[in-house]
Length: 237
Image (cartoon, rainbow, N blue to C red; front, side, top):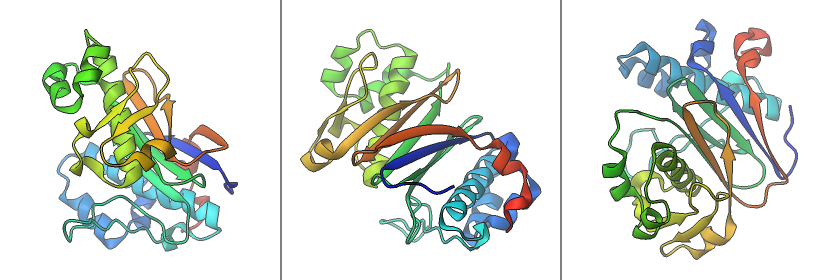
């Protein structure tokens, strides 16, 4: 599996795809992170996401997955929980929520992916007032749950592509309304991001919303099921 220039591939997985040998692919820091998580489902999500990232990059680079170097340095603290990067490899991004895990490899430029499980009990209007601009709230009134999560995933995918994460307030950016094709309209103080960003709606399944932002012009964005890759140890560690 070799990416071609301009390609961007999204791979979907489920925490239920976890296998015992996946833990052998984790770095010391990732193992420590796994052990710090109390709930088995959280440990499974973290493990599958980290293992899948190494399996995919290893296949692309022709290296054993366990030897793939993934850096997660944070710009504000010493804890290795920042955006994953692969020195000498493709641009990558990871997101997980509920039973959906997304891992993206890109040769089209920096990339950000976000997937969110709709939470019925969440106060979407309260959160929306903190995350959406006045123009966005007006454009989508009345805001329903799917609309809220469409806005959220689009915005977070932008902030992950730039590497800012949630250190930048979501109100500093504006994206298109949920019923419209995804597009970045405004990023305060960062016009170059608005010009470079290409956004895509993903299909993670019922009950979920997903979005992708590439800071470049991808020739193709495709989605794939990673279950088979995760179930077989034949890739070699």
